[in-house]
Image (tube, rainbow over all chains, first blue to last red; front, side):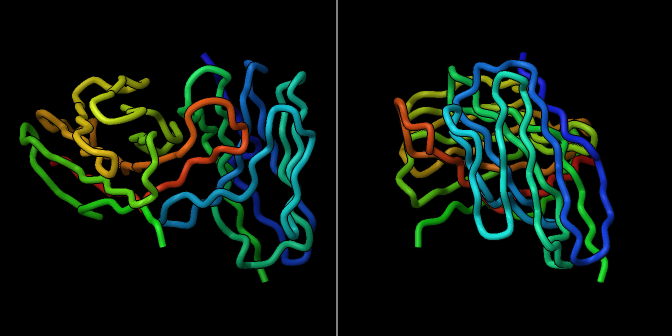
Length: 112
Length: 116
């Protein structure tokens, strides 16, 4: 059974800092990995999707990397802003099936 | 614009009652999923469907059922609601069947269910 772990569970940083969120998974037979953002009381918004054959994806101030062999992914947020405050979820889609396995998330607070 | 909607957004019910949560997507996606989100557990898969008349059990399916009579809708039914089913429920959909590693899931806004 695929286990997805996110560290840290919570993080508070001052505005402007660069930060890294970590995700690890136990089974390297993955199809892709996604990072989602979830605002309080809201649904999930996909931020980045990394295919199993890729090493990284970038979107604006966000960069996600994938090391499939070691079962790790990182989400790098550059020059953080208060609007980045949210919970960030890592999800892995296995080689078999279409459903996602989620980590418990990292709750990020960026203070002005 | 295509979207995925859930109703109701909030519901309070009593133990033992049957409850149905609606999920409707206008993406015309084949794949639909129900997850529940609880503190300390993250999102867990309840049921999923890969097309009309197809339904499958997920990790936490006990006490839940789904049916898929058309492409757009996948209602989730709690046969006899229990306090342990108090949670936030998310519906999701995705398009691709077959090999496309860029395929992503789109999520609805969620339904917060309280069972008293």
